[in-house]
Each structure stands twice: as structure tokens, then as C-alpha cells.
Length: 426
Image (cartoon, rainbow, N blue to C red):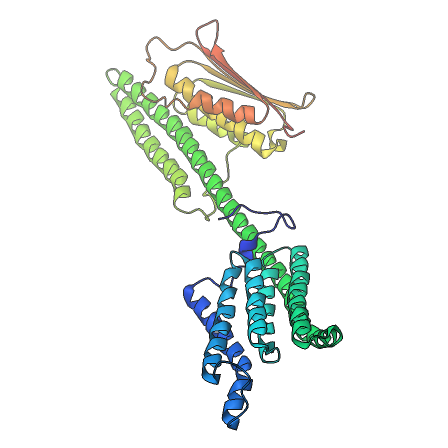
């Protein structure tokens, strides 16, 4: 595809080449023009032949002259094929064939049909070049054709006055078709270029649409991947925590251990359902999500989830989270979810403190998750870290012009703290 052009900038001649796409089209055009011109040029000699014996003024016989005129008409029509690459040469060639026949046989009235071929060549030129150039070429064609006709008339008649009178009569016959063809060619070229430009713009719009769709698809895949990471990380960590607790209780309290194994089974079912919900987005792009996006309004449910699995977690909420912008609330929820999951993975059994503060005076949201040192009787859960947690949290927060701190505490625990402007677009 050619590079797009701004409307009215430059001139693309290739946009108007619509007549000679194939050899067959070229042959048909040449044949039609040749037959049309030949019939007009041979009308007089053929009529003379049918009328009977006449005083033939030429040195060649009528049949030979007819053959010569036919070949000349075909040559003039064939010159139109040059219009694709050399439109000016095509115009000059059509005029030259006319002038050569005029000078050779002194039959101006026979050759009037050739004016239309010259006009057709001028139309093809005007449709391929800028309007100014087309007008200049038209004036040049008129000067060349009428100048040659005037010179012939002076030589033939020997009288300049008679030559001027004759040329004046032929002037409008020659000029009118060429002028009309030039105007029509300029209009045609402008229309074709408009259509071509519209097609280019439509193609660019289609490409831009495809690019946006692909970009949206990639973003959606990344979102689903992060969703799977969050869901899998949270529930797998919960499963392992319950399993560890069951193993530790089995020798002394087998009944309690069996109960915890039942919790593991229930948790596994819940995890499978959550993963299925996340994966369903991959199968139905146009379908609505199975549930609304989770945000800080459901932070209590998240804390309760881990409390039921043995995590000693405290929760303190200050401010109205329901008034937060959706993107801020959902991002903070994901960070809270990841921080609690990491605490369960890396410090099972350690106490966890969750604080969510909506500081209206500073127009910012502060979420802090602090866990104590790992319990000496519980080992960190290995094999659950995909490397996306901290990096994903930081990327989400920084997109909202927020800050994230994550680091160890003096007592051997871990502190995660985020601060997000409530109006990140301002």
C-alpha cells in the first residue's frame, strides 16, 4: 500500500490510471478507436469508389490509399497506450499522425475524425497531471495542430488570407473537442483522486481499528493473567496453610485435623470455581463478567477469608471507601489481596495488621499491611511465588501516580504500604 497523503498535498498520477489495467482492455480500446476513426477517414474515398469512375487526384490508387489511411488510424489510436507512462508524448504522437497525413495527401476534410483521437489523448493526459499542466498542454496542442494546419494551408493555397480563413473554420472543430476533453479529464482526475484518498483513509482507519483491537486483546490477556495469579496465589496459599495446620494437629487431635482436611476440600472447590470464573473471560469476549470487579468495599470479606483459615489478622478502616474512584479502589484491593497472600505464604501463623485509611484532607488513600515474624513451628510455603506479586503491585500503584513501600520490619516481619492520590487525573 502506498503511504497515505494529506488531502490536497502532492499529486498521485497512479491514482487515475484506470483505462489500461490489462492488455485485453488496451486492445479493446485501440480497436474501438481505430474502427471509429477509420470509418470517418475512409468515408470520402469509399463513397468515391462506390460512385463509379472518377478523376482520382492522387498518385496512389484508392485501395492503396485506404490501406495507408487505415494503418495511420491504427497508429494514432495505438499512441493512446503511451498515456500511462508518457501522456504528453501520446498527445504529441496523435497530433503528429494527423499532420503527417495532412502534409502527405492534402486531405484535411477527410481527417476531421482524428480530432477526436487527439481530444481523447488530451483527456487521458488531463486526468493524470495537475490541472495547470493540463491547461498548458492543451494550449500547446492547439498551437501545434493549428500551426501545422496554417502552414499547410499557406503552402497549399499560396495565399495567407485564404489560409487564415480556412484555419479559422477548422479552429473550432479542432479546439472544441480538445477543450472539452481537457476539462473532463481534470474533473475525472480530481474525482478519482478523491475516491483513492477515501480508500486510503478507510484502510488506515481499518488498520488503526485492528491495532486497537489487538492492543485491547493484549491488555485483556494481561489482566486475566494477573487475575489468575491473584486468585491462584490466594487460594493455593490458603490450601497449603490449612494442610499444614491439619498435619500439625493430626497426632494430638485427629478429629480436628479431619475437620481441617474437609476445609481443604472446600477451599479447593472454591479455588476451582474462582479460577473457572477468571478463565471464562477467555471463552466469551462479548459476555459480561460473572461478577463485578472487587474493590475495597469487599476488604472485610478478604480479611474474613484469611481469618477463617487461621490467620490472626486485624482490620481497621477509616474513611468512606465507597466514595473512592473505581480504579483507585480496585487497585488498592488487589494490593491488599496480594499482601495478605504473601503473608500467608512467607509468614504462616504470624499476626497480620491491615489498615485502610481514606485521608480526605490530603486527598489520598493509604493501605498498610504489616505481618509479624514467621512462627518458628511453621515454615514458609515454597513454590508459590511466580515473581509477579511485588512487581505487579508496584506497576498498578505507579500507574495511578501512587507510591509503594515494601520492606522488612525491625521485628523480622514485613511491611507493605501504598499511598494513592484519590484523584490521580488531577
